[in-house]
Amino acid sequence: MKKYTLLFLCLIGMGFLSACASTSKDEDSKLSAEELYNKAYNYLEKTSYQRAAETFEKVELEHPYSKWATKAKLMGAYAYYKDQKYDDAILSLDRFIKYHPGNKDIAYAYYMKGLCYYEQIAGVEKDQENTQKCLEAFRQVIIRFPDTEYATDARLKLDLVDDHLAGQEMEIGRYYLQQKNYLSALNRFSEVVNHYQTTSYIEEALYRQVEVYTILGLTKEAQDAKKVLAHNYPDSKWTAYAAKLLPTEKK
Image (cartoon, rainbow, N blue to C red; front, side, top):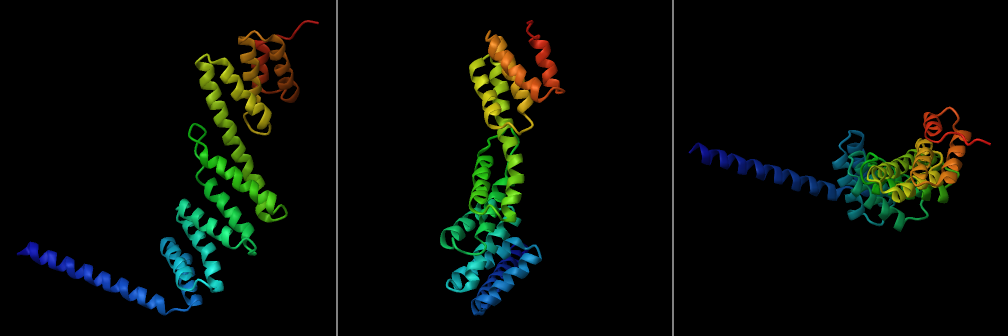
């Protein structure tokens, strides 16, 4: 008997919740675009990000031609971003960018898309797909809106992005070196030397070039890489390692 009583109470509770949800939907449908937008904004301020995002989407659905619908697209994306639902945020931002390319907030939309990828950057030992996408998104901000505060911040964040990409090249290069796959290792280290010269990995990359060239018996190339390393980073530990590995040529 107790089991059936409990089941009955559960069904009553579910019915009550359903009725509340239905009532809430009916109330929302009676709200103007501005009122619905403000309701979503209140959820946002209270850190109820999921409810905020859903309510901003209602503004779009129920009042698609109002000025509030345009604002709601961007704010909905921001709510998803704060809720760490980056894929949903990016979808909303892509819609905003596609349908409102001339909007006064378009620079912010591009910047926010970059941030969504930026927050998902993984360690250098993991796949760097999001890092690449972040790089592309921030470059768009810098190219399209060079004089904005968003471009300034994007430039700063690109330093970390480049460091991650260089780090992955080094990680793979070291693996190839351990496997004695010297040419593949050299290609990775040279990629860092040629394209990531301002990152924290440049000194090691130059040293690794010296190391691989020495192993391959390419003395001239090893000496050239060593000279570049010593000239630019005379006090580096990697310069000291290179000096031990490849003594200075006698004139």
